[in-house]
Every structure is written in C-alpha cells, then in structure tokens.
Length: 257
Image (cartoon, rainbow, N blue to C red):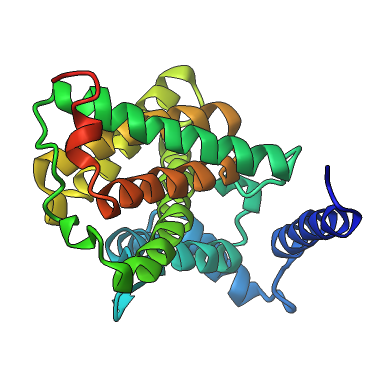
C-alpha cells in the first residue's frame, strides 16, 4: 500500500526531474552573434579549438576535494554542449519514456551486472578476488559517504564523457553506418578500459573494457544515457558494498571454488 502523501511526493519528484531536463535541453545562450556562432562551429569541428576541447575533456576526469569526487570531465562536456550549440540529444540527454523504469531498471541491471562480473567473468580472467586498490574501504565507515557520493558522480561523469561525448565526436568522424557504430562501440570501450589502467592496472582495464562494451552497445541502440548513468552508479555501489562488508572472496568464489 502506498500512502497518499508518498505517492504525491513521488509524482512530484518525477515531475521535477522532467522539468529540470526540459530546462537543460532547451536552454540557449541569451545572445547569438556572428562571433559566437563561429566559436561554436570551431568547438564542434576538429580544428585546433575542437581538438583542444576533446583533449581537455578526455584528460580531466574526476578531481577529488578531500575524498569527494568532482566529475570535471562530465561538467566540461555539458559546458561544451552549451557553448558549441550541440543538441542535447546528441550526447544522449533525452527524456526517458518513464523515469521510474529507467532508474529502477538501470539500478537492477547495474547490480546484476556487477555480481556477474565478480562471480563469473573476472574469475575466468584469473583476477585476484580482492580489489587491493579499494580494499581500504572494507569496514571503513568514515569514508563510506564519500565513496557513495563518488560512485554517483562516476555514473554521471563517466557516462557523459565516454558514451555521450565519445559517441557524438566519433559519429561525426565515422558516420552512422552499422560498421561505424561497431567501431565506435569498440573504440569507446577501449578508451574506457585504458582510462582505468593508472590506478587499477590490467585487471581494471579488462573489467572496464567489458563494461564499456556492454554500456556502449546499449547506448548505440537506445541513444539514451540516463538508464546507463543509473546502471553505472549501481555497478560501482555494488562493488563498494561488496568491499565494505568484506564479501569479495566469497562472491568471487560463488561459482568457481
């Protein structure tokens, strides 16, 4: 049974989500001039300014204030979209048919996908059951809020950069044919995987590449990013939960003893 107040609050939440997305998707600079149009065209192109924008977004990633991640790369993509006059749907920012289904479905998929990766896929690659890079989170209640915050920020920032921005830029170069889409899925997955090498090593690259393939394939089919943001956040939050409760070895050996 749903209490009327809760039902009303839930409806209000989704209405606000729709309103925020509508405002973002329809917002435009107040004044368009010939100079600003040239600047926008240069940002959309692949000349010096366009390449600088791509490199800046690609290398910015997340920065940390204390233990809290700030998704600079994702925020720069939003700035690039606004300044370049790129339509928001080009990076997957389109309103879902149902916010509730997108959020619930994304979280369910992300949780199940992480458990599949931990229990079956990564053991087949010979991965260490213990993620030593993040094992400091085991039982670490003090850092748990920062970890949870950072996982949500990763869902927003990394999907915006690697799927939204990556697909938009590569599609401009390669086109929209089936072969081009396959190439874009592979290229963005490889980029996503290699971006994890610096602090997670080759095991992190392998996992991120597989995740990148799955997410990129979904994005190529749907061209909608919000379900993937939720799935990404849920995938990472599940990883945090497994580490926090010190269940890594147990989950990793559920199938292969």
